[in-house]
Image 1 (cartoon, rainbow, N blue to C red):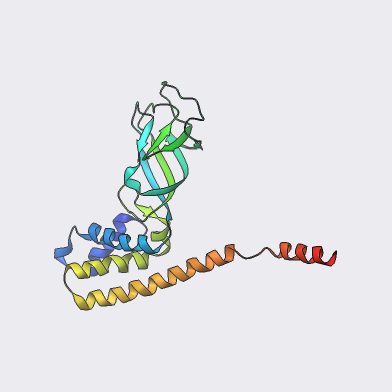
Image 2: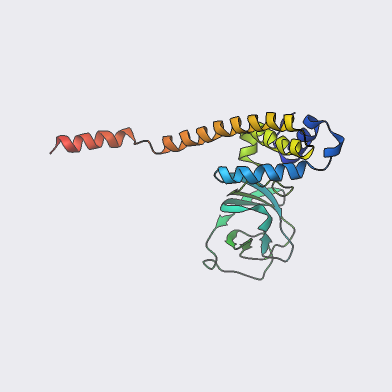
Length: 210
């Protein structure tokens, strides 16, 4: 079974552990795994599906653990539309309810220029700490590294059932997978800092003209 979202991860944890006494505990194992991963990894890209409230110009996003917003789309009349991000206070507001077109972040809310005329569906992409939930059922880290997410979660499941041997095995896999991910991220950062060859050529030309 593929592991691409919160529900699938919970199912796999329960299936792999094959224990009746862990039913309903998978969410706790995931949360504990994310707690340590968040201390060791950079924020990741996450997609959340939000629902607006008719008559309200805002949506509460306090449960999303966001560090940086990226993009927002609204679906109205079965059509998804890209919304324009602006700084709060730089766009006019109105009390006339309709499909909002502009958005800004204020604290733990997304603010629109107008109230929603209906309970529109929104697709919000942001960078944040790992925090899978029903509201944010997937993130780029889970899609790219499901093995690490699974091993880290089952490790805590093994601690819960007090199976030291199982815990040691999954802790070993967790550490190995984590080291690979950290090395991969370090390589990406080094690649971003590589000097453009054209700049090197330009520097040589400038020196030859001296």
